[in-house]
Image (cartoon, rainbow, N blue to C red; front, top):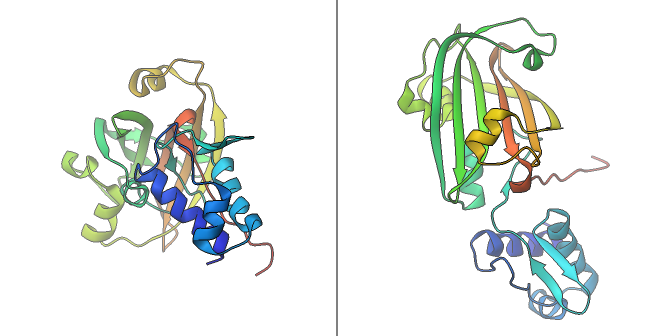
Length: 234
């Protein structure tokens, strides 16, 4: 791992573990230079990553101020369950089951031209550090998974699919948009219509290319962050 990424991950871990709290200052560039035995530019690259992700604000003459310790890092280029993300981010979270409905047609907005399926719809509210941050709608193909118990829906669907049903999840196609908050967003996430919602619509496939599920995840934009590393040349 490059040195600036190591510094970035160390600082991010300290922020997520509440070693640094909102309103605190990061160690100065000079202290980080001495701690890691690197150049000032290497330190600044790490600090810029934190700033780009909305964790800090660099104030001239004062330093780097911690803005938030409650953002959920959400990767778009990989397939990870919510429980895996929470564990990686060292967050306290609950998974509140809102409802389960059988024999539900998938909304056209999720299909993107794919054939319609009959599904079981599971609606869940994700609460992180006592703040509701995500409203999830999972449409699970009943031809593959006829029924999901409520006890499973309150935990991890992916773990149930892979560990209990031994399904092999291969890939997902994701579509991302910023949209105005809808009525249920306001009710379940405790926001008003002035807060935008980041919507991730995904289509998850098994290794035999069958569609396992369609998901619409509606994130509070003020509690959302994403980080991707892109390589120009392989």
